[in-house]
Length: 301
Image (cartoon, rainbow, N blue to C red; front, side):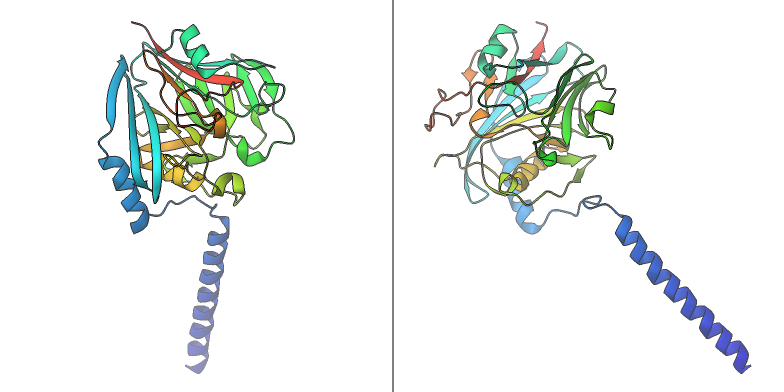
């Protein structure tokens, strides 16, 4: 009897040891950011401000809505936000990537020249000579392979344009060069993927407040383009964490940060530049910076 009880205790001990070891192994293999916890009470308060705001809303085409709002107390600060909602189910709509390599172009001029309904600035570029510094490909042709000096987290996602419309995709393990998607504009950091909020590197680029431009997709397939003004008392700009919460509150399940700072620009047909680009250090519409790539949203009238 004693031998039987001893055997049972040994088996139980072995089982418990295996369970603890298994749990430890499982915890190690779950990638960071793979499970997004519910919003904290503080995050919920900020998200509610965004969803309950009385946005000034204007349809600017078949399936495109432009919204803007000047928050007086979002993230304990003033924030001026412009949003484009693009219904990708409308087959008459087209998103395009316009670039120069090298050199500079202006978001507003690209929008007007291409008879777009709206346009936003794209991704990072060389501020001295122009041209993209991140991976960019159009219709299967690689325009720039991406500068090796660029931080990985600033090109770990991309806007992809293809037969299925617009998508936000993560960089493949083998790098962008292995992607078969025909048109890609990389940027970063990638904020959300498949409804998951991703962990970010704690660097000043991410943690400091700046003007920001971002693009995302909702669960029902809408494209959301956002420009947040900054570097002004009327709009202080947002950190990457705050930008992520903004995109999440707007319904995005995928989201990507694009170039920001003085580059952040949104142009709308019939209204011109609708945000307040910060390059002239004034809160007006005249401080637009020339960039190297632009995303346009067009429709057939």
